Length: 209
Image 1 (cartoon, rainbow, N blue to C red):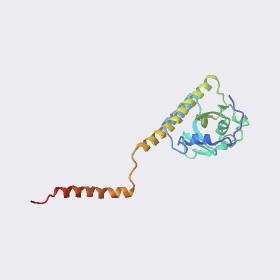
Image 2 (cartoon, rainbow, N blue to C red; image 1 turned 180 degrees about the vertical axis):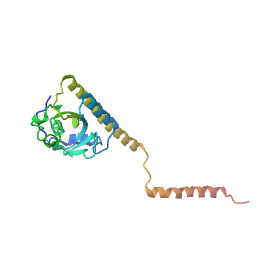
Image 3 (cartoon, rainbow, N blue to C red; image 1 turned 135 degrees about the vertical axis):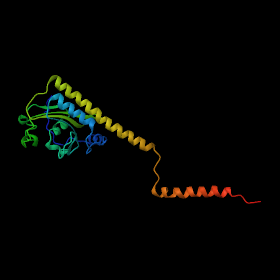
Image 4 (tube, rainbow, N blue to C red; image 1 turned 120 degrees about the horizontal axis):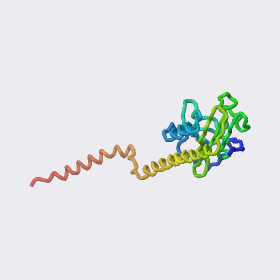
């Protein structure tokens, strides 16, 4: 369905931002598991660009694909601001004729984006990112194609959740490990070993009869 709500970056409560932060993915480098999704979407829907993005209250962070100079953008300038704010699958067959997008830099600034589809990605029921398709020509996304796009969004959500589960596992493992000795404790260890050796040596020396 087409979203009719315009995004303004003011929809964010603490819960959504906390869910995003729990993933520990904002500002991180590329990962093959996300690149695999965007490559598959690009081929399946025959678009020049497919992307997985994360959005906080001010910025959009492209998780995949990552190119120099494109990883972070002002959220208000992006199509995905609308998708996150509306929290529904958003399709614009012709962005130049769509009041929600015609003023965006990717359209008005001459970048030539004429088609956009965005599927919000949820964690704990809250939208933290998007799976997006972009094309330089107007087109439709209907029927089975729309259903497949939604299913690819489920795949991306699973990868996001896996990220948090991995992070939680690392935290649990670190909690179970014994604490590392402090520098002062490390310096004391050789002294204690020497004392033990000296004690054992003294015990072996018995008085002569």
